[in-house]
Image (cartoon, rainbow, N blue to C red):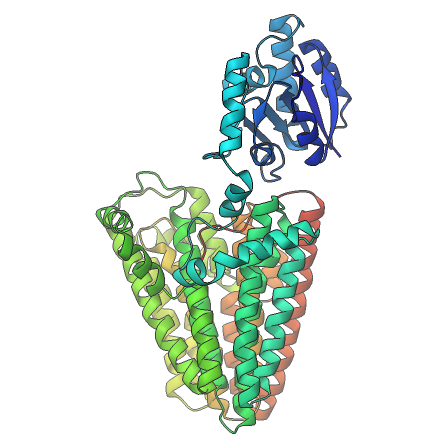
Length: 604
């Protein structure tokens, strides 16, 4: 239960008490600052509390934005300030100081605004939501109150609320083909008490049914799969819009939204591959290649953002040109569509599934994603080379965590730390790239079962350690994690393809999917300021270099049929370990009340 303490002289005819009750607040009334301090102390420390001026005039949605958003310990709008348990100490301290200064006298001006001033003076971070056309004011006389009430009546806050439920930045297909009606679906869900997590789960189930339809291998199944994939995407947009509409943000919801997007897409790839196999066309290599390419694209995005989000002097001519292009209407949509974000990508997959074959669908997907990856990576390389950014220790640690180095690479990194200090700044990504290329090309150019991929994998272990032997603060060091991802996934793909035995590529698909989940989980933990997964987890699944070496050794020692069986067992083992730990962590974080919101800027 949340508690709102009304302060100041009540105004006849005011709706503030009804508005606060509609938002779930239990009401208390204080006639002066001393009584307000007493009431504040009586509210249990594990509850939200708000101080609201009784003369407040404004939209209900302004109060909702200012007083109920779970993401911020402290938040305020004119005439109201609120604290969650994490912000209670700062609020209590500011209240005590204000009460001491005011002497507990009857309130004349706004106590909430004075408390906010005191919090600002303490240097305490207080969230102030962007209200736009919404009204939030504390009128000082009847004329001002009448003017504020007129301003409230002039603006439809429900229309503002619906509009703000949609992401400010999204892809063309999502913006013009989905959001115009999905926002109303979100409102329908809110009015029936549905939660974003329930909608997210419905989206996952719909996508899995779509994958099952695709797996039938029939034209009717493919058509149904395409329709259901679009329906799943509508629900995928709806869950975020419902979260913004009703301010139902949570740690668990952020994790579900992020990971289910990947699970839905990659499960659909598997369904297409199964459907093609029923028709006599083996496209598992294409399905795995599409998953590898899409995952590496995401790692490029994640690594670049983590390397630069808190960098100082973080400007460049390339970034300035990009910002300028974003101010020209048509270039904004071209630039958003060219990177093939999730809306455009899923629409393309759905249409091609319904009208063509899985092979054509995968060819188009690979070509489109390859072009998008080249475009975005080239632009980020240019930005990195032209900007004079100084990267922080936190960014270097995030890149090291994203590298997912196991005991072997970490051991070499420790041994090579001193020699690595004398290497030029660009060598980390170059070493990671060369080591990865060596193991993938060796596996591709030699026969299955030969010793040379093992030799190349041993070299890869050494180069991987050297690549992370010093802090990753160089201009292009954000390329190290995606190069390592491409090397590991590519090695598994090539060896499974060369095994040339039925079931080897599906087993490889499962292994890469399990490992990719671990890598996505690492990203979302870092984004939520929870740090990387525990060291024991990384050690237990070997790190990227350990898994790469293990797979090459298995290919050298086993027959193709045995390799398939062991690859399947390895996929199951990795999936069980990472899923159990991930679920334990995220459910525990959710129960602990730590909010983590999925990045609003991510459209991929």
